[in-house]
Length: 458
Ligand code: ADP
Image (cartoon, rainbow, N blue to C red):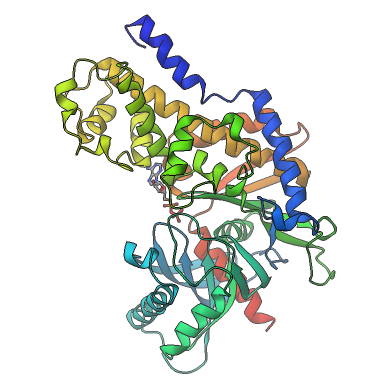
């Protein structure tokens, strides 16, 4: 791709550190299995990285659920309020409104965060002309941060992730905090279930496909959940009635926090970690998800520039350190998708992205190298996620396993799914057929399904 064979070799050397061959992946899969066992066992759970939280969601939706519920979805970029109407034959009607969570609230006091959520809920209900008196609406709260659940409507936050650091929330029951804020506004809404976005995604997908046994998120963060047999869940403290299963929220983003993955981490990963709000945490997530992928690419670009391997002869152009290229977070993960959309030699998209980054007149070589970097970074992420999924599918060990997937990285990246599937074909037992299904509006719909089932049994 590059006209300078010498620098080509040097570039390959940099990118080699991102490559994960099958052997390395198999090793990672073994580590993950071990971490999962640690998370599930009462003796080791406390210190385990992969927490494997039982969610108290036992029955998987089967399409027969009907009714009207509200849902809140907080877990990353957007906060949404939804009104979900479940109709016969798996039909769903949905209206929703997106609200912004200002940075000042993300980093401020917890009380303000929950007050803000309640205010948005009230505004939405007014807009939808929902009665503000009378019987309480059930509400499912999709709250996609690591929580130790104590019941379907009770969950203590273990730690914030994905850029949130609100004070006074860790170790508190977030359902109580939300319900208090709702009651303060005298809104007739009862939070009946706390739902992780992975679980919502699994449920929404199961509503249409009964083989669904895994929920996966590839968005701001990454995480997965799956249906586990109760006798494998040493930490289970509920009843052992039918169905003898529970959905486990893995919180797999924390895989590697104990240093197990250090041998595959690059200096770019370390840099991303150090400049994050949670250094040393979410090691697996930081190698995969949307919040970090663009930044990894940006750091590699800067490193290659420093070594005079990229944007050669354009020194004048980058005297300006205020350009996005020199700004932390300046290379958005969506640019990785844009760059990888280019096929052939014109590099129209890549050129546009680079010009937006402050590079004047990037050459053909520049474009080819930047695309090469993006491909390597996103492929590593896809292979890591794929290998981790293979561990789950092999463990579930049923003839057909469907994975419900949600998140912008999976949805919009042009080859993330393909790269994941390719890796999974190698890693999943040959007797199992698997399928990845995009779950539209999974976390909202799923939360509604769970809330309806919960409300029915209250
Ligand atoms: P969340 O996970 O916060 O609920 P999303 O699933 O939309 O929400 O994920 C947001 C993340 O997806 C952001 O980190 C963003 O960088 C990334 N993203 C957005 N658009 C794209 C895209 N076109 N290609 C790849 N990643 C994207």
